[in-house]
Image 1 (tube, rainbow, N blue to C red):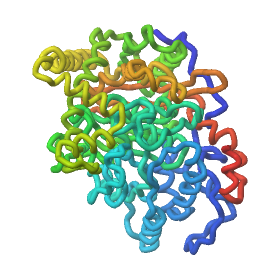
Image 2: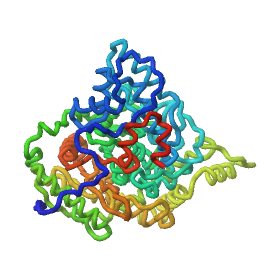
Image 3: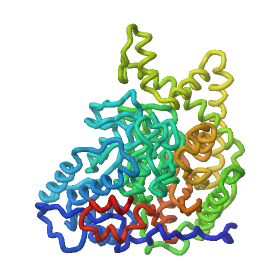
Image 4: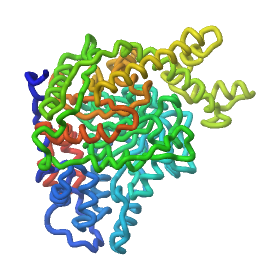
Length: 569
């Protein structure tokens, strides 16, 4: 049906499929190392490129594991390499609110395990960024808010604990809109993160720091939270993969609550394989979260197939539904073209493509903001300067509450608390909150009906590519409208995968476009399988931002990382 459409156009800012001789890792500063492993004259980047070809499954995580076990480089060398890049790019991007002081000591522990021939976890040596609304023991966890400035939890969130148990290294805490309320990181109390594709544009939000860090290769993968698209929209803006799991698949223990019936912890990576591996690591029932599912977690890695092992029609028989309402007025024309071209590519892989209508789709946005604001007004009541949050000076208790919240919360958070309190008030509960819950039920039924007829639904992840910093900050309704592609998935509690599928041209910038794949509840494995095949077979599917790719050849030949400041400047 869509075979006459043109495939996604190529860009000079992408690398070929298999990791090339000039990969996206940079050459680290040559510091003396007491390494027991023989390192040849080849640079660390060349060694990673060589190791990456062995697993041939399009995964940095698998490549790192292969290289560590074959002793081509050490975990310490890898950590130094990433830290050097992080420090060089951070003044330009501002992805992180805090960088861990224990990264190198954690890496040395992994090297010691290798020397002792001990078993390594599947995430050994993998540097993970963690959104700052996810608790990390001994590390600041502010939620992007002044009211929690300086707070260091005495515990790890369950997702973070599982990453550490499997050998992952938390490199730092990434920037976000305050308590996850925003789409650009402009609502952060501390800083605004830039998009690696164009430093004058937003990275999306609220997990903009996590997406920017992965896109700029400041870390291997990252955790974000997704209440209404906060993993998927920034993944689209930054040209990376974002994976939102089914509600209940991942424990929410340690995630600062925004809207408890919608919040999930999601994963970001440069490839579907990396996002899938990270999701598998953090999934599963948790006794500390009553909403976490006891359903068995499938091994997502079993869904990975190397491109040279694929049949000519590897997705033959798969039914794909293209949501008609997501390509209507209000969606950028080039975005629509990129999504239709991606559908054409899926058709070439053997899928049958059908347009499906979800008449209730447009109702999701107002219902979402009523429900999310209502839940946030309740959840954020705990930040009063007594139970949680920094305490303001006052002569009496009521004044203490008022001053602590007035100085601690930003304008976006205050506005949503007021909206939610209004919707829950006795005179308006039926008209707003109750009706929004009824709309939610309608949306859930419409998605179920569509997924009974199709294996996967597809749509854009956002109605436009990344826009400029400050462009929508004074027009909150326009910013809220940008969530229309993603909020319905949260209302239905379904899993969704966003991966880059093409580009749009905006002035002098090529900006990535994300394709959203929506699956049935707890069917993340199917999304990962289809997405992995899609990205491997998409021509020139390595998306590397100009911040890196325009100078990658120079970076590979630099002896000292200090010179990178000049290059990326």
